[in-house]
Image 1 (cartoon, rainbow, N blue to C red):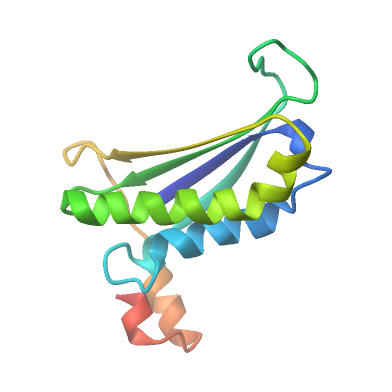
Image 2 (tube, rainbow, N blue to C red):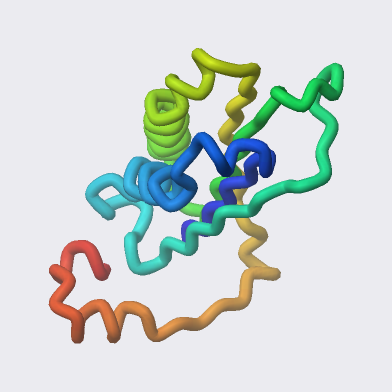
Amino acid sequence: MPHIWVEYSSNLEASVDIPVLLKTVQDAFIGDGTVFPFAGARTRGVPVANYLIVDGHPDNAFVHVLLRIAKGRSEDEKTAGASRVFEAAKALLAPVSAARPLGLSVQMEEADEALNFKTSNYREYLKRRGIPEKVVA
């Protein structure tokens, strides 16, 4: 973990570089990797084709970021991580927001420890690729 979902109304695909949005969100959340591990990051872009935003006008758009983390971080660490994501996404989306109705939200959830099963070999492959140990930890 962290697992990151970036849901967005599909009407943004013509005006937002989605891979850049995903990288911006992930980089802002992970920071230097000391609180939220880079090797645990799974970031997904999820276009939503069917939606109703306020009055249903076709120009209305949204981006919703869900950050799911394991337990164990302080309130200050969680607040700082979510705030970094919000500010980075808001800055990236500022030109879009200036041109059309846009809602941006960031939400953080902690995964249930007892019901959180996972395994990966990402750290091993990151080391093979020469990613610095600090980032892989």
